[in-house]
Image (cartoon, rainbow, N blue to C red):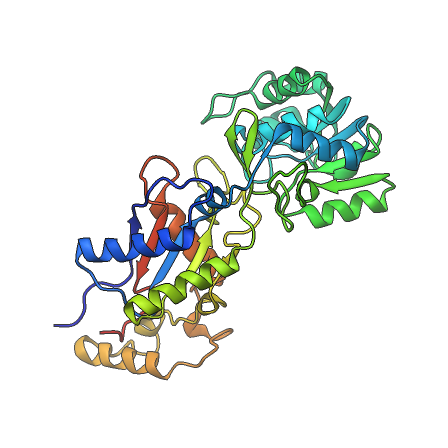
Length: 397
């Protein structure tokens, strides 16, 4: 009988990871044990993935509010700092903001509206339309914002993020002023020294600010891009991708991940004779159609992966072939014709109609999204994901 199952994604349970643990051994042993206990084999081109969180925990890649404050003070001068375009998140940004506020006397907080970069809404587009506000050109102060929109709360968290962020700044001893704008240059009449906190648009933001005459522009990716007082750090991303650990500590995005994925690949090869692909993953790259939240608050989906995960899918659209090239065939004849076309397909299908509608995204972004959905973000206890059959197609038996 022909094979009936395609891609399978399994969440693999692992011990609670602590600082100093050997993440290579833990991931390898967890995958091998899961396969043995559950009664399935490990195959060539399987994918083993682990959350960025367990890698960073094993590395002990943490920093305190005081570490953040010291770096902000050193790089931005400790006086008035424009903090612009942060995301609205208790987990992702609140603790960072506490550190930033401790490193300055005044914070001019510029929030994008109607939503942040990843889709957390302060207000709705309908409310903007009703009030006749143009978010591309209009700059609002806090008084005007309150007059127009009142005290809106996030639909999922129940938080008024404007009020929450102001309270965090003031609790840390800094003065707070809030404006609402989407052009990063709008902050310059209020502050000439700017910390831009956007994630995926950060390079453009820095360029615009510098061209417009900002005295100092530092991105969140440049805060804790080196150790401060022995703290953790990330040379590539700084505080981007960090998460709340405690009220005074953040866990940074993991660093130096390539040797880890390569070592896990080698250990599994030695143990099983099978060459698997390995990756570290963070947020998936997908959008919630109801809440409008784009999941990707990390700077990248995958900070490291083995060579076999490079590239994009190279797939034919079966329904296109069935409806067009082989519209006159049925049953076994149709199946045989499609299988033959798959076997004969070119190494690069870009621009060919038979691939129209297949997902034109990087493999690591697609697989990372699958992993993120598989492992969850709560109490499942499966920070490792084992995927089988991802690279199979209709001809694979």
